[in-house]
Image 1 (cartoon, rainbow, N blue to C red):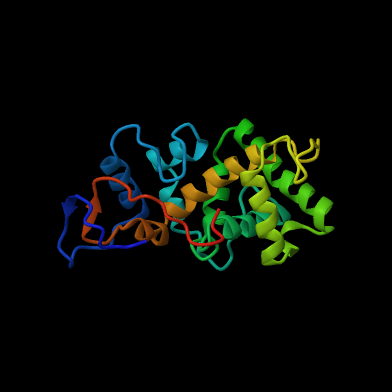
Image 2: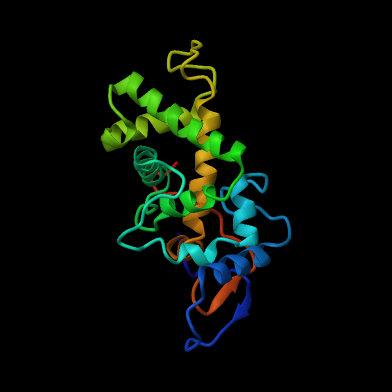
Length: 217
């Protein structure tokens, strides 16, 4: 994605100013996008959007790089699945610690949202075991991509032959839910912000169109 796209600049700062925090970057981009505008790839109705809008956990997010970090909500196996899914859906998510940020947000979210998220992780693990006989993190890149491509392109009640299957029912819904969390976490990181065109000295009036590289779902 080109960085010099000529998008309208709504705020400029001198290069010597201090580095913006995650909260400040997100607030400025949301403000620039306009009231009620959706975060890139995230519907305004998605649970992650409220977290990004109020920024209540952003200070805690600064601690995600600690060497002794442990998940607050997910168990170790769930966190491993999330990290693998995040990297497969939005490349760069692992380095941006999107999985850790999602765990942080889920730790203060509602019981319903927590259950929905865990159910989505479990749905992909179930499908992975059914199709390949192993957990999603153990799949190679081609297997992961095949499963995700089916999940995001196939109607929820249809299998690859055009027939109906109970196992695959709802997988697309789980994919969309996970993609919302992952996209919100990644694009609120510095790496994600820069992909959108953010730099230290300017904020754009609106988000660029998201043009994903090959293999990004």
